[in-house]
Amino acid sequence: MARYWLMKSEPSDVSIDDLAGLPNQSIDWYGVRNYQARNFMRDQMKVGDGVLFYHSNCEVPGIVGICEVSTPAYPDKFQFVPGHKYFDAKSTPENPRWVNVDVKLVRKTRVLSLKEMREIPELANMRTLQKGNRLSITPVDPKEWAFITRLLGA
DNA sequence: GCCAACGTTGGC
DNA sequence: GCCAACGTTGGC
Image 1 (cartoon, protein in one colour):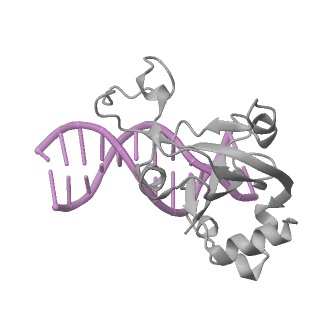
Image 2: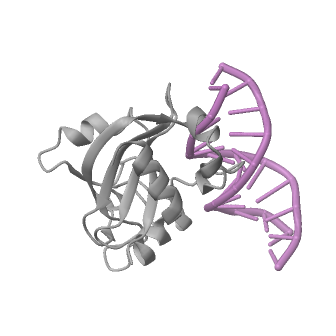
């Protein structure tokens, strides 16, 4: 049974257009340094799971595309690069601390802004909309997934 | 740039 | 194990 996820990216780092411009329209979801988010990738994500690509920390935050998980979780390459923003001295290749999956673009959508999401009763319980939530990866309920993909013209 | 909310670190 | 201090996220 496939699961569904919402994954946040700052467009100044990787935007939906950046993803669309990549050779395979696929990217390694590097840089997650939160244990809950890591555990979702490591323990629950399966190839083919649905992903809502979300732009955060930007002018118009919101969902901007539909993607899918395209690889199982594997060690995040940047944790081993000294001096890199995502270097982790406590992580070793033998016992890596951080992992990521690859995410492949299915299609860009219009922007479903955070503002609009908050006005939709069917989405009121979305985890990413709850007060204080900062997790960059959150599970999406199948009903919420169905509603959003329909709204965005599946 | 501000700041609320949350996660992590480290002294004890 | 507690918790104060600090760092980060992310909307506004």
